[in-house]
Length: 307
Ligand code: ATP
Image 1 (cartoon, rainbow, N blue to C red):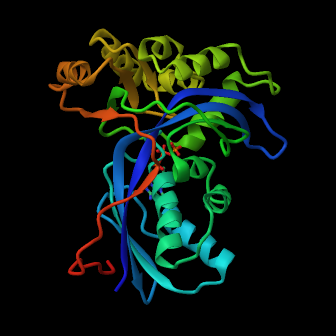
Image 2: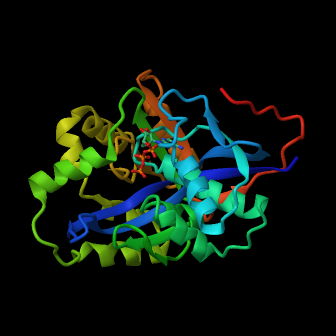
């Protein structure tokens, strides 16, 4: 029986600016997105019926799981009616601004393209992903990218590979992406505006690949919505800075925050400074240039069953 196993990378936002609300009610965004080596493992196996299994209590196993939505979209597009069992080993914190659900869905698109031998191009997979969620086209390709529109219009940026960072999250705090955007919209948003000058400053810093130039230019408009409601996230961001991070910022709609480091030893020192706090989840990560990677093939003894 055929099995495909993939590593589905999380992303961080080096930059997130909300330009306004579009006529279709989505937000017009400018983002710089970066894949990191924190990843879920997604295993796909041909099966008589389609289902998803994940041991994380906050991940739904019904049709609202984005991985199942990806199967549905692909079945509709190709007319294929085969079943697939999906097992998600969740390492990316859930509802944390790291695109965990989106990257699982991207892995399903990439994995089924191989399992069902569909021959779809990366562009086709990205278009199908955009029907499910705005972050999915980036997750399919990964790396370093400028994202515009509602996040699905992508331009590749010079690869920012091997940059160390510390990712920190208050373990029992989740933030809904919809809530963060609605709060920002209610309190801060006017008509669609032109991008601010700092976008181009960050882009040239990314092109230089110098972390020390990038760090002071990190920006996330959603901090204005999330930090006042969750002062402990603001405090955590500050603790990363005090521990020596070159720059610290909330990722996406939060509440995870990250601090950039000059090298691995520096990242480990920052992590060690926070490690005694039992309320935190901490990860030393590296930026990477792939979104979805095929893992080594799975032994045929793998047991996957319905719950
Ligand atoms: P983004 O950064 O794209 O806004 P996020 O990282 O903040 O997303 P997710 O981890 O994708 O958030 O989870 C948001 C919600 O989506 C969860 O609370 C969960 O109910 C739902 N969800 C659906 N499918 C998944 C999945 N495969 N993994 C995690 N959450 C999922």
